[in-house]
Amino acid sequence: MERIHIAKLKNHIGEEVRVRGVVDTIRDQGKIIFLVLRDRSGQVQSVAWHADEEVFKIAKSLTHESVVDIIGEVKEAKQVECGYEVGIKELKIDSLAKAPLPITIEEAHTENISALDKRLDYRWVDLRSKKNSLMMDISTLLGQSLRTYCFDKGLIEIQAPRIISAASESGASVFEVKYFDGKAYLAQSPQFHKQMGIASGLEGVFNMGPVFRAEKSFTTRHLTEYVSFDVELGYIDSYKDVCLFEQEMIKSVLGVMKEKYGEVIKEVFGAEVKVPEGDFPMFTVEQAKEKLAEAGIESKSTGNFSPEEEKSMGEIVEEETGFEFFFMTDYPHARRAFYHMKDSENPSVALGFDLFWKGLEITTGAQREHRVGHLRANAKERGNAGSPMEEYFEYFEYGCPPHGGFAIGLERLLMKLLNLNTILEATYLPNTPNRLGKLLARKK
Ligand code: AMO
Image (cartoon, rainbow, N blue to C red; front, side, top):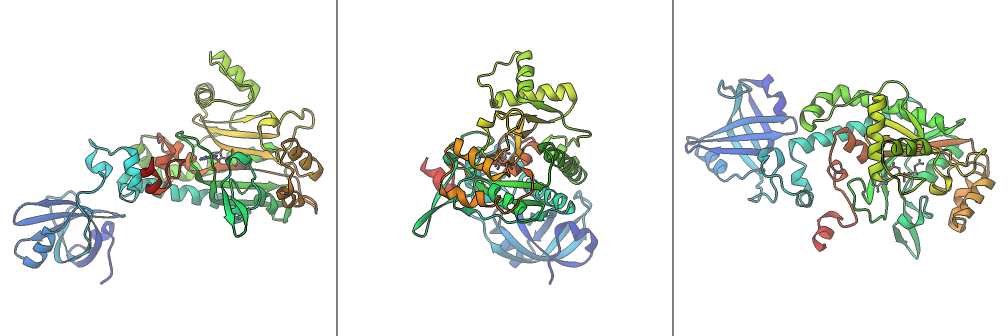
């Protein structure tokens, strides 16, 4: 018999159906056992009666979260909220869950939420909660709508290699791996290969996939492996063309998210999805520092911002303009990647930007240096000019359009969308400096 999802049972009242799912709640009332079943579509009460000895014996042996396969009749039942329940005729245990569970599943026991670390140790149990299951739905649509936006704009999706021969960002944050008799690196970004897409005549490319950072950052916004959503656009006149593309993409994606999940995000996560209208405010680093100083926030460095400064700047901008987003431009070139183009009028400044949402950096972007002589010189300045870079430099030697692009950290985007406290909660199975699955966490 074909399985019917729980949400569809209302169309089968009076019929015999097959339901497969998990035992969410057990209420044993002596001669009758109520089993609340759960699948991804919803929940339904099912009933085992004492009179049916075989079914009753199996029901008695069940534990929470066991997986069952039931054949029964959908019957009207005024005492339950939905107005029907399933009278069990056949009950098979597909998988008996060990009791007790290692963690509480959040919404079932709201008083006793297991500490995050322990929940992450048993992420496959933790992800069963309604909140986390919803987080996974939203994450799916988020990635999909970013990809759809780029697809609709005619961009080409690439799958940049993840094992590469040269580090694209800083050499300090790269994982080295053995590659047969030599060595290779895990990509920190698809940076070089998205630019290769432009040199390949693809004109505009996007890439969504994992990237790796060997940074010992113990913060609420850093992972050692995260999903990067990258875009690279050819034939631009300025990095501002890139900002505009990203701005319109964000508006469109938030529109999609609000339409499908706006209400439930508010109800379950307490976050309001605001779809921005108009151009995002844009500030130079200098202007932002001035604004912060006016607000009495002291700065320790000149060319970048502490997390506290970023948060305060987010609050100030939102208060002044109503925007949760703002662009920051005119960073000192020395603090940016060597492949950013320098401002020809003021070469100490990079032609790039960051985008902030609710006080958190979610994007870095820039116009790239496509003139190979300049690019080599930039790399040399950073001591980055060795032979592993040669292949990258060659991408620009046989004709390459002016171009620029950006990358969004997908987990950071989801974290802000849902107002989560930490990026760990916005990640399927987070890897951090002290967590690589459960085993490394145990060695702490
Ligand atoms: P950057 O290194 O700034 O730029 O990264 C881009 C965006 O990726 C996210 N991010 C992270 N998310 C989780 N954990 C981390 N450790 C982490 N590091 C970065 C942030 C950040 O804004 N190649 C350039 C992009 C470009 O110029 O196209 C790059 O990777 O949201």
